[in-house]
Image 1 (cartoon, rainbow, N blue to C red):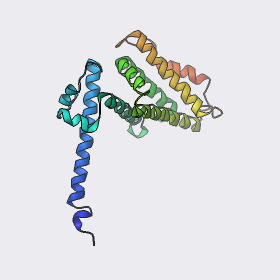
Image 2: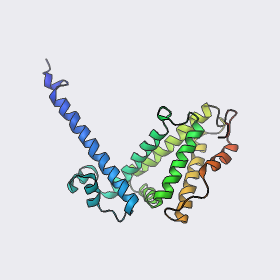
Image 3: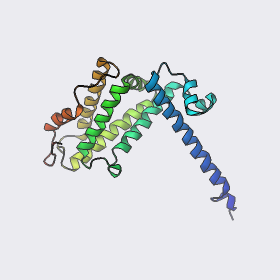
Image 4: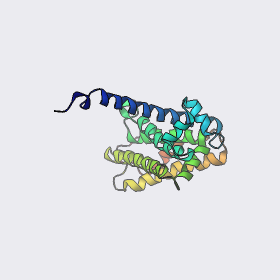
Length: 212
């Protein structure tokens, strides 16, 4: 017979609390880093300031991330999770897959305008950091999911491979990053991405897509 403390008893509850605490600490470090990178820039933010903002000891940082570069890679994964949550229909996102694709690109345009330097750092990290590469792969996966939904809903042509459409959408995003880089940090974009998606859709629209 299995003792009670090994089957859903105090030990498992303690492990659960410990896991929750670890998750909360990781989230605090990521949130603190994101805020500081936005305020001061990546290069000007030492690890000490991240741990101070997160209210943990400096040594705690290295229990979760081997370096600041590794944290940047994890920030990419965390950001993809946030973008996915922002596109959840149950949480109020539009039912139309194309409208959600517009929302995704609009959010990314705002991010590129606000934190273009950080986004460029993240792209560079994809060449050397497996986690950063995974974040890029997950972002592409999110775009492809929306494309598949749009094709199934008749909002996009079904005679074009979803991977090709997803790659073209990805190019729209990269275009925004490049424009923001040349315009300079904090520059207000004069060209919104919504009309660009509309123009893009003129060649991809299925019978059920309506501009809006």
